Length: 554
Image (cartoon, rainbow, N blue to C red; front, side, top):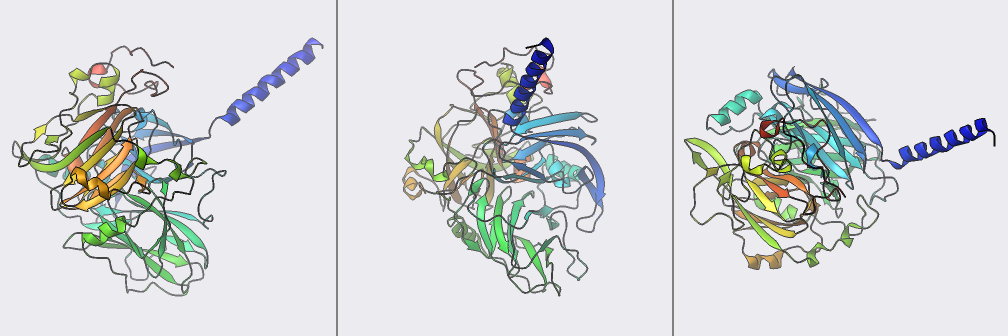
């Protein structure tokens, strides 16, 4: 073979190998986001909002299982900023979680690039600002993870796929709300409810939020992105078939309305089989004396009339909501992100190695309101907890296990303000009990994981209550509500190394200390269990200027 022909063959082989390398890697999605202030008037009152690329709410991220998502965030606000990807598990990669306990905030006038993979996940999620009270001004948006084409989905492809972000809203600025909490006071009731940042006037002038073709079926992804209020969601004359919840396919039941607690997401199928006209989707407050309501128009493409003013009523009381929770079941035969059926993981036959009981409380510390878990009210640190741990200087920032696993002693009202970090053993199968002694509903979220929501019941928990657990088809999800004077139980395996936030989704509670972090360390400090700190990670606090520790290896 001549030298020229040999060189051509060699280059062809190298090009082919390179091509196959690109094809073998999961696809990338790239986004550039400019975070700015802007004037918005969602309730008719001009106020300062947080916009992403000029949008309120922010842009939707439309991804597929195992996609790599790269988001370059430019902070044009007047204070540091972070974005959290609620429900995304960030396997082995808590560096991208976007919380003050894992990441240094993005300084004013600078940018930071998030790079994470939606590994082995499907479903409906959202993102939002995790710093200060920024969530009260916007900066949130939908994040969907579609199934790969080779994985069967337990329903026919819908005609279209819509994201519905519902939540309570305040006309005060996020800085005013923060000052209110910093002064020791509580937030008042919200000023209204929004659906995708709007509230229909109902005078016939409203443009449709969504359109539907007659006899076609549509998927609606409904998430409560608000600050503190449980909402009931319904659509005039249209039942909703629940198909997915926070990353899990569920048994498909029809519902006239759904209670969506703060931080939760549901996916439903809606068929346009009614008289062709406009219809309202409705979101209204639950468990409040004063009911706030928001509407948005759905229009049939061949519609010939306005929506009726006769709105479907919301249910009353929390017993109804508890009974609805009990109807939610995991679809054991459906495949989620992987080809194997969800039910092939038999969580009910695994022995529990640790029980952690968490009791929420509140009280005054130095004359100011604080919220706590097992008597400890978490305080953010200048050095993110994960950075202190990775750089082997945790003792300079926090102490492990400032709370016990036994909950709150009877009659105890003492609250200690300190970083709250729970040490967990890698791959332990644990039971976590949430006990709510208060008269207000709680909503809890755990980052980095999904868990099996096996029970919610009135009263106080005891070991004998385990006989009431659903050990067959409890839904695997990442949030769970706890009703007043009630308890909830979840089961999970701590198999995702990192520093993971467990928090009240009620923003006031979270901001004033009702959260903790769970540290799950790789015993072997191995790349098989956790990724090294990424290049160009922001460093702050005591670790700034420190040399990087020896990296993890296989």
